[in-house]
Amino acid sequence: MDIALLILSLIIMLVGIVGSFLPVLPGPPISWIGLLILHLTDAIPMNWVFLGITLAVAAIVWALDYIIPAIGTKKFGGSTAGMIGTTIGLLVAIFFPILGVFGIIVWPFVGALVGELSNKADQKTALKAAFGSFIGFLTGTFLKFVVTMVYLGLFVMKAWEYKAALFPYFD
Image (cartoon, rainbow, N blue to C red; front, side, top):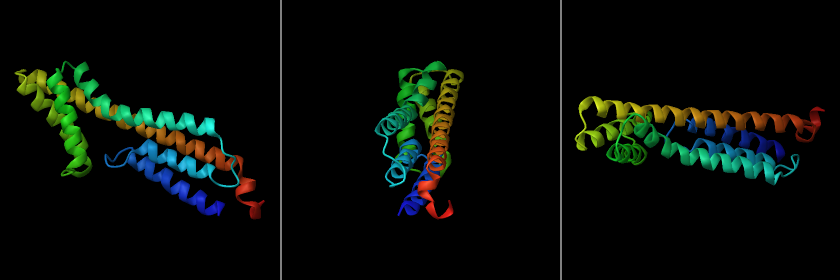
């Protein structure tokens, strides 16, 4: 049973990594579920502190993924209308994935641009704010990817540490 949970956990960890790039999959929380399943094996003792800290990190990164593009818009001179446009663009990308993976890049940019233009900003300012949204998206994606890779590293370390208990027939 431990081998089945180990394999399931690894698959979920890999789905979490893919979720770093796909807007429909929350990468860090999915990877955390992989860590949880690993700890549900009989071979690896339950470590609630470890799981609690990694869950908190996953939740914070998941929340930041929705906030960072709006912050990027503001940092690049965007107004509240631009931040609202970015958020609306993110929602459009999530609920109407018309453009697939590229929608998570295009829609926040378009939302910020439309928001700024509706706020009577000139085209140059609106484009700068939309670029800030794009930078925010890249930052969030990079952060999610780093966290999921760290979780994969923790997974490998735990599995290696308890390899004798996980694989008693190969010892």
